[in-house]
Length: 321
Image (cartoon, rainbow, N blue to C red; front, side):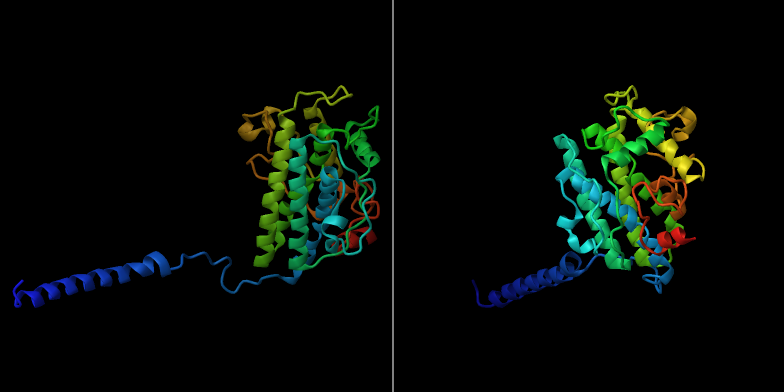
């Protein structure tokens, strides 16, 4: 190659390389360095936890404790005292809780539910504080009384919640949905963005649990619950009607099958998800919930799942007044 050509060739080569490097350097920030937006998670100037939110968000701990120990004992044979004793905060052990005779599928579902409730308790207590686990009655005799009240007469033999998967899921039907309606009812009263985020996360999982239980029972809606001459669907209807009666504030509960006038857009008799005319979840107040879980129809008279009443300022003040 002639000496006069070499500098020209090198110059062109160097210029080309510089252009490639310059182009690449302009692309790199878009490919590697630039971070995607993942917020904001709340409006500017919002309050994280408003003082008025604390009692409202501590009240659900009563139901979360009920669910946690019922599910953990049902699936594993032991409860919160072994899984997360720090969350018990000195509360008494539940009465009558025991391991249920579950098939593998149902045990997997309930095990997951149990651990989810541990997470719920931890999330609430770490965000707004909490209180000791209240005394819970998870005995077979208590569930038998609930079913007797639902049907209006004594079932013979007494209903046994831990006997098999169907009985256990029917008993579970009586639990998460009440908490779900409580979260819906509480949401409009919250102010802080942390408590709003907390209740949104709790409501999502509680709704999912209720949907799984309802679907499980809907698939078996026409089966008779041994040894009674009542179908699974009738059990759910009776339990829901009883809760409406105890709650005393209108129709907020429905079984897994309904007449068309109560179905989605008045066109379905299936009722895998319980909802109002606009297919929105029903909401309940703390007083309504206590009337139901106490089984007394009064937020001032303890009983049912809570022989000594619920804990926290809202529940304790209602007991006093």
